[in-house]
Length: 62
Image (cartoon, rainbow, N blue to C red):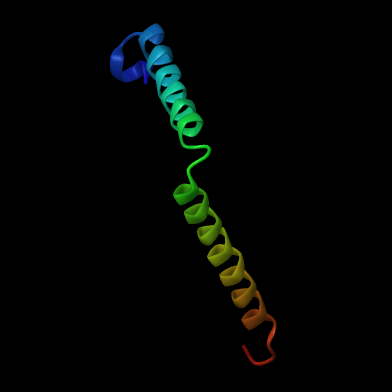
């Protein structure tokens, strides 16, 4: 970021503000049932798909 702004201080400040905005987003959505459900469903799909791929690789002749 500092290369684009031509100032190391401004680049550091922008990155810090991005982290602060992300932290604020996490803080305000921590009790949201919709977001919790979406994250849980996404993790279930990711984990189950990984197991299916691993089992297909373990099959003989695959």
